Length: 297
Image (cartoon, rainbow, N blue to C red; front, side, top):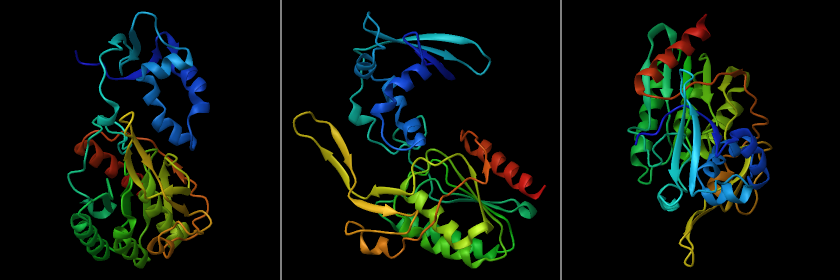
């Protein structure tokens, strides 16, 4: 069976908003963070039962509305499960495939008079060499196009190693005549937030931030890793280092190489709210062109 795609209206007869309200006290983090992790509960029969929204016949029923307004009921047997560790914890990038990985770390498109667009889907590169090379090439391209408007898309970028992106930040900051616009969304996390924070600190009002509120605040814990709990087999993600990019402070848990880069970015307030889908390379390119055209007009 192919699951219908669209807007989820209800689960087991209860409106999604009602379930979200009941689950709110169990979810930590910012409003956007809750939006990212909250949907896990809607696919978790035991959580629905704990919140009082389970069904009595061993199935979970979803009421979905497609883009044409047609509604469909989908029933899923609760016993037909997938081990959570194969799906979570994963990077919350917003893609349908939880195991998604970017084809490249940098995608650049020259829109001639409109400007230059740069897609940065991820800063996570265990080998480091591919990301380092891509960032270096992007920095060279920015310097060569220093008179063009620069549009940077970090939607869905859940982070990685922001230190490897510093050459690109330096190149952008050195191109004083450039107009720089950064697009973010609720799946912009961790090192990607740091990337935006440093750019904003360097460029000030020359940088315009558009999109939707990012997936976390500017004060958070990062680094760390994963632990397999021996009794339950559950996988737990933990963080070990403090970051405060709002006031620019650190503590003894902050690695020295990161502490040296921490700056007071203040509150990263959106200059322009703009929400758009990320489906497909062609549609993304058209969207980038649309934004650049709107900036010129």
